[in-house]
Image (tube, rainbow, N blue to C red; front, side, top):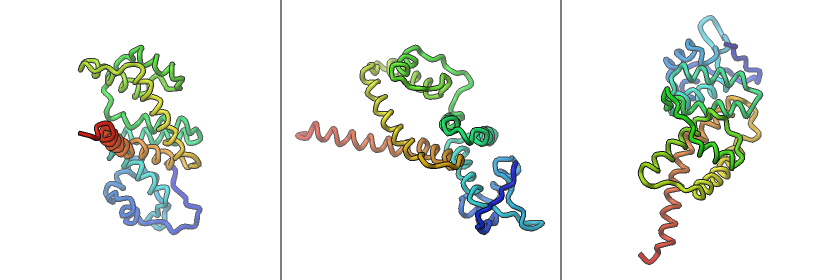
Length: 218
């Protein structure tokens, strides 16, 4: 793992400060260093190393991967390694980041992709990888709806898909202009992992408002 060299002239952080600013304990930081998730700091003396903003950003990303979504350390290390390999390819970097957030939730056996999901994606003209976890998530949801006797007809499904397109534009707009691959990955995880509950809450509020407008008399 490459040792970080901060060329900005900023005063390097000691591990205690890195712990305070990141919210990660010193013991856990040392564990990440041993496991190769975090690069070694710049040697300041025989017993002291200095750390910079890259270490802080990487720690936040590790926390998002292992803490919020519960990925095992080995999976988080693989994701971080893959991100480094695709640092110059934003599309691949986003695919690795956004795809990784479901690794801890996936079962070992992938369900076969129903033709309906393939047909929908083709009709929308979306460029989506065949192994995208969201494909099987959508297929499972449609199956569950039908099992409960509440199928989602194609017209409604397409309408929701177009809403999702507009949301995706807003999401990716927030990543424009960011060049640092770790920052792109961190922001992408925040948009999915942490913003999704807010989007769900906004939907619930909008539903209540729409109900009030439609049934004002009652």
